[in-house]
Length: 80
Image (tube, rainbow, N blue to C red; front, side, top):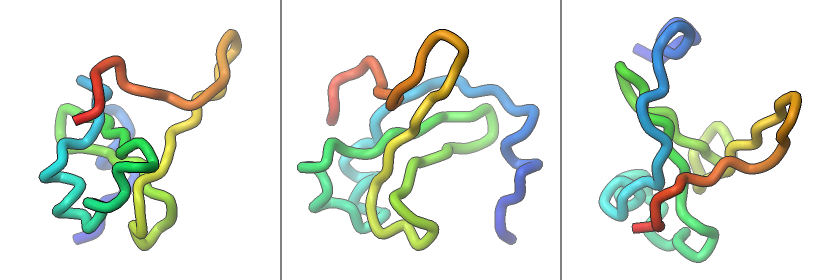
């Protein structure tokens, strides 16, 4: 069954992090490290990953637009 917005709306983001190397390999992105890796939002019920397109051809970026800040979201931890 495909996820829906109900799998995201109302759930908490518990962590913002880089995907681990084995997670990148599982998605077929092992050669994408030069682009900086992939950002993951851990939710209380799963993980959201930024992808460059709907087919998942590579990692993508998350952009935040807020009242006081705008820009790409980067985790505080070092890349794996």
